Structures are given as structure tokens and as C-alpha cells.
Length: 221
Image 1: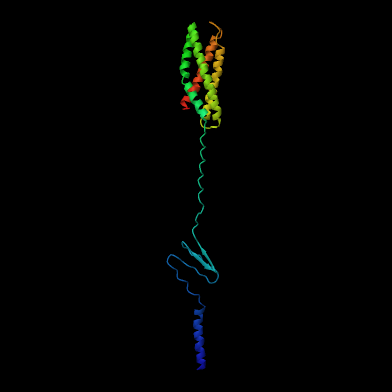
Image 2: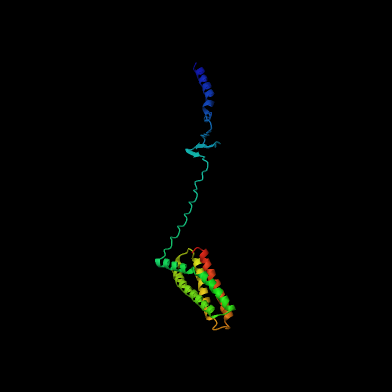
């Protein structure tokens, strides 16, 4: 009986030993996910949107790469320059300058008419009228030269309209020099040799001054 029991025990042990040594069944995977567990120290990667790698106490998550770079902040626009403050004297001189300028074109037209008439047929009355109108133009340009240059100096730091002011000032100063030269070239008597040069310089000076006047008129200054 003892021999039979030993044989039965050996048979049962031989039958169960392969079952004990076999690898455990793979773990069940959830829908949409797959797990791979390798107890031998190696791991297999599973293909899925998010996969876990489990092995040797290490867990890895495969997450889609996200760009965290922020767009550069827009640069702030430079602050506008504060308006230039003019003095009360500047405004007073500007008003005088503008009022006197209204007589510029009428005086020019009158002087051109008198000068041409005097050039063709010189008389004492025409000569007197020509001198009076010429003196009025000289007085007008004297006032406007003082007020204009004074205001041009005060406004030199104002960038708004600086180019227009400078161009106007240069043209008017050139006309001033031309009118002075015109007076110096005036003939002393009838048939003087400077009549042609006097007339040419007068027309040129009037043209330069008219250009400067219209430049500021249409420049809304």
C-alpha cells in the first residue's frame, strides 16, 4: 500500500509541475487601451493614442507634443510728441504778419502796371506813383521781415511745418535782397542806363516773393 501511495504522489506531482512552471496569462486590456507587462525585465510598447510602459517601477506616458511658445507681444506705438507751446508775442506777430500780407498781391500788381507804363512812357506823375507804391512795398516787407524772422526763430524747435516755414523764410529774404537791389538800380533820370536792369530785377523779386506768399497761403499757414 505504501508503494502504491508513493507512485500516486509521483504521478500527481509530475502532472501538476508543468502547470506551476507555465507563464501567467496576459492581462486583459480595456477597450481603446492596451497594456504590455513583462515580468522578465523587458517591456513591449503598445500602439494607442496614450500608452503606458510599465517595467522596473518606471512609467512612461506618450503625450502628443504641445508647443508652449507664446507669440511675441506687440510693440507699443511711440507716444506722440507734445504740442509745441507758442508765446502770446508769437501769436500777435503772426496776426500782424498775416494782415500785412493781404496787401502783397495788390501792391505787386499795381507796381508792375506802373513800372511797365513808366518804362514805355515816362511822366512825372507816373514816376511819383511808382515811387509811392515801391515805398509801400518796402514798408510792407520791412514789417513782415521783422515779424517773420522773429517768429521763425521762436518756432525753430517745432517739427510741425518746419520745412514749409524755412522755405517761405528763405524765399522772402531773397525777395528782400532783390527789392533792395531794384532800388539801387533805379535810373536817376529819363533814359538812364539802368532801366532794363531795374525792371528785370523788380520782376524777378516780385516773382520770388509771390512764390513764397502762395507757398504759405496754400500750405494753410
